[in-house]
Amino acid sequence: MNNLSRLLQAGYFLVIGFQFLTAASVWAQDRHSPKLTPPQQLIAKQPPAVVNSNVLAQMTPDNASVLVSLSKQRAYVYAGNQLAIDTPISSGKKAGFTPTGNFTIIQKDPNHRSNIYGNFVDSRGRVVRAGVSARIDSAPSGTHYEGAPMFYFMRLTSEGVGMHIGILPGYPASHGCIRLPADIAPQIYARVKLGTPVQVVN
Image (cartoon, rainbow, N blue to C red):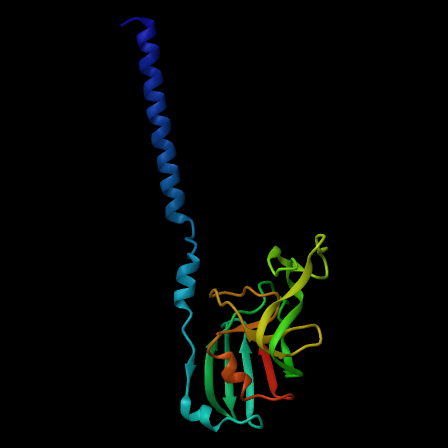
């Protein structure tokens, strides 16, 4: 066997050995690295809303109250001390976006639109720029700001935080508001009043 053949053979075995070590390293990392849960599984794991029709029938604006748990991503609506609605929510995507504490509903608006978040649209209503902040972004020429819809809005703070219909991806995703399912928000809205207590806890 000449020198060239020996060099080629040695190179071949070096390449094979390197590939084996790389594969073993990847396998070892896969074994010990924590697996990320796909968003679809998170959505599937969020239990749907449960409505106790008998208790709901007894709820009035005078005996209604709401408890929101940010850690559980749930809201609990009570008639007196009886649970009427247990529903999933989606709160602020960053810590502190949804304030904790004791609040009361200070405004109700079934067709509310955000005065902070929305889109820039043209004169025909076509979206030119989506997902903008009226506080930061400038409207392109020929467009105007249109606030994001927040149907069945129940305001909790003067800064704009409230409860309303919204997308529930299975995790905290809002700018601070408490998003509710489309079939649940109207039921809560119809049974609360200005002054209804809402407690938000971690």
